[in-house]
Length: 210
Image 1 (cartoon, rainbow, N blue to C red):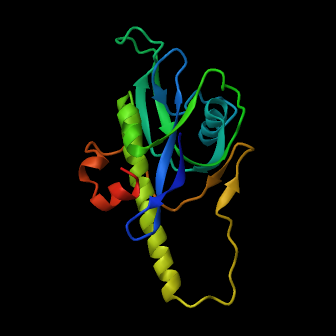
Image 2: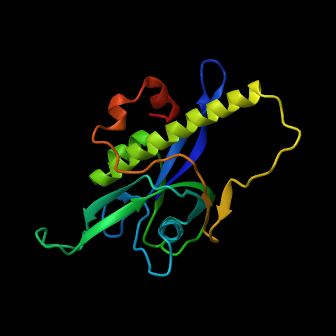
Image 3: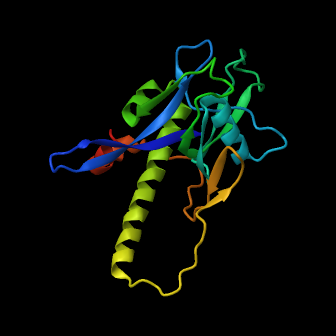
């Protein structure tokens, strides 16, 4: 998954404070690079439960997981030496995880260091294409969410308050590691070939701290 958080940025020229998004990456054992939390999918758990477990074990974070994946990517295991062999092929499901709790101690803390990065830094440090592609899909989803929030705020201002309001939980408890956020937004399929950054407007770039 891609763990993320919103952080208040310095005040702009108008005296207002903006929020920028940061993603969490972790160091790889025996390598000088940073990756996103990932790992095997056990037989007795769902793919979303696996994503939450790996985020806890490798990065020591809990949070709210989007139930719709950012996409599915195929890559080869670094332990596979023969590129012509069918063995070692992996299929990775990537999710967005909004971090709500960052633990001081976690199972793999002796082998992994955590680092919060802005989007520009995360792209620069992404060693593999699938990591950059996942970041592009992540930014696209975050921008769609932002537009929906703006539309929702406008509707609230225009519509009179209802007399009877039913409380509908936004998040469903999934495990002790994280919550699963239900969503009606459809983010299915593979990300497009063209990168998001190549067609991003200045507004999007500023909003995400890029």
